[in-house]
Amino acid sequence: MLAYFSLERKPMPSWAHVTAYYSRFYAIKALLNLFCANIVTLESKAKGDKKRTEVLIYLTMDGVKAMSAKKAKALWKTWGSHQVWWALFKQMQYVSDFPDKDGSHFALSDAYFNHASRNTINYSERYLEGFSELEWFDNSEVQMFSHMDIWRPRPDRDITNIDSFFADTNPEDADEGDFYGDDAQIVWHGVRVYLELLSLLKVRQSFVTREKLFGLLDRFGEQEYPILCGGIREAVTEYLPTWPEPGEPT
Image (cartoon, rainbow, N blue to C red; front, side):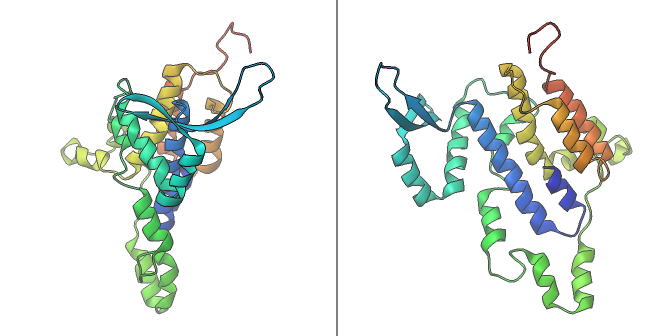
């Protein structure tokens, strides 16, 4: 996500879009892992039985289902390695108590930064449809820089909070559509919902921690987006406790 924001500051929109897609893709796989919707290995508990079975666990309208990993991997070849995960992710809409705060269900959508748009940029051979920045060099120097001049760098605004987003804006000029229509919202939603679920599930873990995320902000975001990083810090502090809590064993 931070790499996406960094590329948004530069005349590299194609790279920014693909990077935003991967931020979403990793976020949905992380959310699926929280719900154990993934390929898992089951081991027999019977004495002397060392049989191991791989199955794909997923969600449907009828509850939790399982499919042999062999059959599931056959779908990979038919649908594609990314499309399978998006299909599994859409089933999350059937989780009745999925958090529904500030448009959380929007995180379940593939409305933007999806595998179709990523494939178009990654694999298109049409002029100015794939990684268009590379094709700027097919033109004269004047044309090349005119293409670059079209790009406008992302301003440093807090996309995590609507009041902070319009902090320096005249109230008469504030349009909520600018906040909710910001492309970065759908990227942030996936990360935020993941942190929210970690908080609700009270998962004790040392992999995704407040300190690590703050370190990433310091290293990769602070110089270009100090206001945005401040908003992300507040959100991370809200959703990610510092484990262990005082008095708890480490």
